[in-house]
Amino acid sequence: MSGAATSKDSAAFCADLVRTHDFARYASTLFLPATQRRALLAVYAFNVEITRVREQVSQPLPGEMRLQWWTDMLEGAGHGGVEGNPVAAELLQAIGEFRLPVEPLSRLIEEHQFDLYNDPMPSMAALEGYVTDTSAALFSLGARIAAQPSAVIDHLARHAGLGQGMAQVIATLPFDAARRQLFLPLQLLQQHGSGMEEVFSGKQTPQARAAIDQLVGDARKHLGTAFELLMHVPRPVRPVFLPLTLVRRDLKRMSRADVDPFTPHATSRLQTLWTLWRASRSREFGG
Image (cartoon, rainbow, N blue to C red; front, side, top):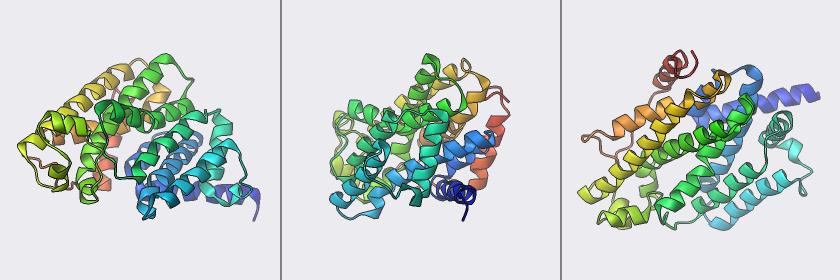
């Protein structure tokens, strides 16, 4: 098999991986030029590989080993078989082609070590740090693929990531509670007279709901700032931030008093595509 064919297969593998496991991000890449889209899908496929480690292991140690493989790969340490891993191959190509910094990718791996253990997220500060090095890092890397970096874009990426990451904590609450994992800050719960076991019971209480509502409010503030900043960045970079329109939709639903945060909510792929397509044609995203 030729190198070109192998490269094409690796790109297709990444696209399929993201489409299967992170459809919202996959769909958002459809509004970017082909070269940028391929690089962004490589970054998103890497993120899928890292975030899925928790689901693929039953004990922390095997998870730590898998994460260490990726850390070593990024450092260029002792992995001659990287060409056999399509996600690693595509990621390295994207790093080289778009001069992406490796440090944010390494920090993303480090933050996701938290996922392997059942320790609760201790505080809002800890959650903000986690989200900054995960969700916000993905926005920042995507922006570097689409445009030259700037202070305004970095500021936008941070608020976009905080809004998206906090919304994700609420969206995955039913799933996380079922496996007794707490990303909702324990400190925030305790401030409202709630705690871990109340969340793990999977039943809404006024105290837990008050904590969730506060997190929704914080997420909406970050999202509002992100949309304000969006108008001050170059048009070519705005499609990278299209997932924000999905966050806005989700937070609006989460804010409703009749919505139980402990009941899983599914959105169809068609609805996701429709929301993104409409947003792509709006003034906000340079349409």
